[in-house]
Each structure stands twice: as structure tokens, then as C-alpha cells.
Length: 585
Image 1: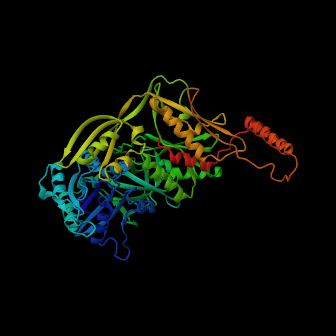
Image 2 (image 1 turned 30 degrees about the vertical axis):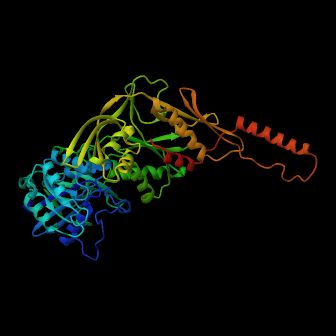
Image 3 (image 1 turned 120 degrees about the vertical axis):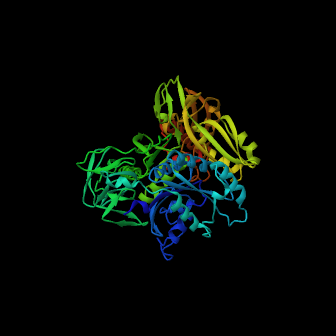
């Protein structure tokens, strides 16, 4: 096909500003999906996305409109899924920047715009939800015009829900966003993988942007980074379902069924080329390094292999997920997993449960530390003597209406850097802050303090020295490494006390009293006791001398003492789940 008629673009915005709804209107307007098949959030294919009202996985879609072919990639808006945005931006030439007229510019608006500028994409600005009574249309248009340094008349005013001016958006996409370079069709075939999924019959399906040349079904291919060969079993477009075709050409977005059955061989950012033809790799995507780690264990130990297989399949379309096997005495075999944030961890665990039927025990998320020059991913790796401790610090930006500035300012435990102004009623608070403070429910706290109006984004800065210590938990004198925790030295007593109180709440009583202790460097800093479960050993006696009852009670007391000395507490797996759920990192 003629590359001049192609337009490849994304929709970027903050979470819940209307990306998926706008995509729905595009599908209707172009006739890609019939009214009978149409459903809200059509491109959000996961039930989890519909329930949470957010986009997690980007979904490509090919549409035809007035003689043009439009390739749309819908993208996530939550800060934990910005890696999805960066991957989709590398596959397109332009971006619709969508801003909610009721909320104005938010943190991820700025973060995603910055990513788009780095890719030199053409920006089509639009203010959405103008149909709502609380919409601040002119104020939002002014904010966006000032941010992009354009005229107010260049900002489109739309209602994705009502369909108002949506056709104008498509016209602007066609007129302003450039087509792919026409001369690339003559070059040897190269395609960039921006996503993938697994099919048990066709092997790994690679989602690609064809950069050079063309490829046909049946041809032999090679993946340059992993040096893996395969054969094109099928290829085609996203319409939005898989639509098989005879070939894919330069500038097009589509899928290639590689026939490769090993998920680890197909990597996001790799280049697909034709076998036997020498060519260089395309500039791939920079996969973000996970900073938040948590352990996942199957409730049923027999499900370990199923969990491993499930993680491998999820990693196919989520390269930021990392994992490696680990074993803990109390929990058995599982995996230590790396995530981009706590929502990312929650989504992965939910997908493992829903898509693979796994019941999991999940540890409290923690961050990666550097101790004496070595990376420490879990408390079990923490050395007895730690001299040079460093932790990750991030640049945090909070966008908030002016009136909530005081409350938010008081709640942040970090270094204040600056205040920037977005118009007359909105500001950006800039901080440098340890990652452990961010993942300790900071997002929810900011939302609560601002009645839902504030938002935040963050980016890694560097590792800095920290005064941190490891708290160990002893249950009936036995150290339980699963409950160990890294905390700031000045908060060690409060953290230790909170943990043993939580354990007392959820651990079942035994036939003997159980001591729960928090230990710091071998010294007990907090303690709680679970009283022994009582059994009435004299209930069957009727009348008689009291000495007989006393003998039975003494015998019971002696038995409990022996049990206490020899007994080991069996911790139910549901207790681990309750403890990990109830504690902040």
C-alpha cells in the first residue's frame, strides 16, 4: 500500500481523562466496529481494566477513514505503566494529547508529553469532557496552550462521550501527523517488536512496526538480539481482532506469528529481519529497571511450575517484569519479582489469579538497596553488618490546586525543591524523595488530602546514603525471615511494634503461650504475647474432692510448659496474606 496514506498515532493523557472513550468513538466513526458489537472501553480487552476503569495493556487498532489508513495505539495513563507509553510512542509519528476539562493538566499529562517530545512526535492537543457542567473549558485550554506554546485556537474542544468534534480530531490527525518515509519500502526488511503474546498453536505473536521493506507469510525470519530463527506462520493487521494478510510493508503496524515456542526468545525492542540477509538492529526500547520487589508464592506448593509458566507468559508483553526463583522455609518455593510500582505488582498478581487460576501468597513490597556496593533485593540478603547503605531516590512532581498545597506539603517526607505554577489556580510541587516513601501508599494519601484533585509522577535520580536497619521477627523464639523488614533507624520501634501487634491479631492461638518479638541487632525492641488456648480438662468431673481437679490442672500446666519448650508454631498461609496486605512497605 502507499505509505502516504498511512497515519500512525497514539492517544496519551493522565489516567481517566478519556483515552479509551475517545478510541471507542474513533472505532464507531470509522465503521471499524459495528454498533451491534460495540461496547464501552472496546480496546481494554482485560476484565481487570474494565473493573478498575484504567488501561493497563496498550491495544493496537487499524482503521480506514476517507481513503486513509489510521493505526491507533491506545495507551495507559497510570504512572506505573509509563513504560507501556514509551514503547507505543516509538512505533508512531504523532500523538493526541488529551486533557480532562474538569481536572486540567495532571502529572502524567506532563510526563507523557515529555516522552512524546523526546520521540519528536507531532502533538495534536485536545480538551475533553466539555459536555460536563463542571468543565473548566477556557481555563484548561489556556493551561494547555501555555504548556505547548501554541495559540488557543490550536486546541481542539471535544466530548469523547457525546462524540462532539471527534471527527475534527481525525481530520487534524490526517492533516498534521506525517506519513512514514516512502523510501523505506526499498530497503531490506526490518521490524521493531513493541509487544507480544503467546499462542499455543502459532507460537509467540510479535506486535511489530515495520520500519523497512516488506515480509510475507511463509518466509524465514531471524531475531537479531537473541539470534533466534523462525518462520512466519501468519501475519496481519489489528482490526482490532487479528486479521490475516499476505504481507506487511514499511510503515505498517501489525503482528507476525513467529512459530517460536519459547517465550524468552522473543523480546520487546528486538529487531525482526529476514533470515540470510545481513542487516543492523534498529534502535530498540530502553527497558526500565524495576525498583519495587515482592515475593510471590503459590498457596498450593504443587502449583510452582504453573506459576513459573504463567510468569514467563506475562513477561512476553511486559518486559519490565523480572523474576527469579527463591525458597523460604515457611512458604516453600516461589519467585522474587521486580515491578515498577505497587499498582504494577497488584495488576500482575490479579492477572496471575484470573488468567491462570493461581492462589498466591504475596510479600510486602520493598525497594532495592545497595549495601557495601552490592544490590540487595530482599531482607534475606541483608548482611549482619552493613556499613555503607544506599537507597534509590526519585524526583517527585505533584500537580495540585493551590488550596491543597499546605496539606500536601506537610505530608511529604522528602527534600522540597521548587514550586512551579500552571496558570492561576494550579501548581507543581517538586521534591526529591526516597522510593520507600513513594510506595508506602503515597499516591492514595495525596488523592485523599486533595479530594482526588492532585496527581503525581516520579523518575529515578540516583542512589543516596540512608540510615536503615533490618528488623527481624521471632515467633516462639524462632526467627521468621518472611516477616523481616528494612526500615529507617529512627522509625524502628514504631515499625517493629506495629508488626508484632498485627501478628497477634491474625495468628491463631496455640495450646501454649506464644511470644511475638521484634528484634534489632539481637536486641528485642517490641513484644506481644498470644495467650494459650484453654481447654476445660475438669468439665467431665462431677462433685468429688477439689484436689482431683487441681491435679488435672497442674498436669495441664506442666504439659503446656513442655509444649512451649518444644513446640513450633505452624503459621497458616492465609496469615501471611493478611499480614502482607495489612502492612505498608
